[in-house]
View 1 (cartoon, rainbow, N blue to C red):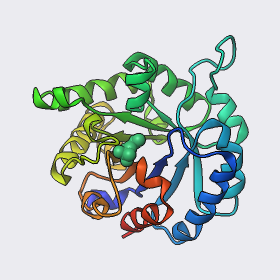
View 2 (cartoon, protein in one colour):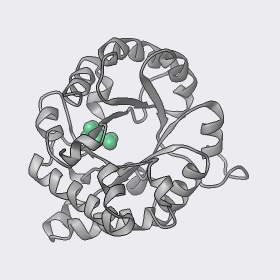
View 3 (cartoon, rainbow, N blue to C red):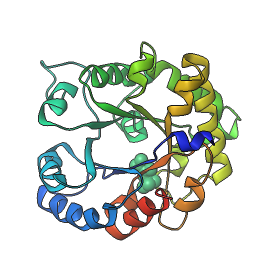
View 4 (cartoon, protein in one colour):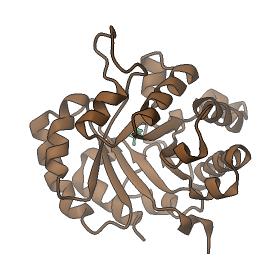
Length: 256
Ligand code: PEP
């Protein structure tokens, strides 16, 4: 058996700061029939204020709901923040942590990403942990080192049992929202490196089971080729996740 067949692909939409609750219900109603027979897991990660509507609209479907960030503290004087425990308490199963927009625009660091990951796992959530290099780092030839470091810091203290609730999304920063996609070979190489690191840290069984997504301008036209790569087990989709038909094509491509 090829190792890839040990893993079920996960296609997750990152809606970023888009959609009102009403628009959320409408978009999920459009996506649901397209995802109905999916052979992969399907997740939509929506803004906090849309979580309630998303949970209601996905009830009885095979679509699951995620948030796009969480704070590391359980509660307290953190104006404007939302804790992992709050997400878990409302029945949200997934959370994206360490997205490059959180890192570059809102001061997230490898250290805070690790703290958020800890809190999310403690709360019982499934973490979609984002890692990826800047273009300058790729040009310097240090992509693998950067991604290994980000991954290693975030996984510090994560047990093998908890790792089963971690998905890693390799997202080269230069490919996010730019229309520039990593070639299937480039993406697969880094995804493979992440799996090698996880094997070093946790052993082969855990590494074989780890879902490693690719993200960065994945769309209806390029998804099939990316998803066919041995170490690409799904995708984190920004722009194309806001168009039901395109998202449906990507879900289908991950279902073969
Ligand atoms: C993302 O936001 O994680 C992402 C990959 O965005 P896009 O698909 O728009 O590049």
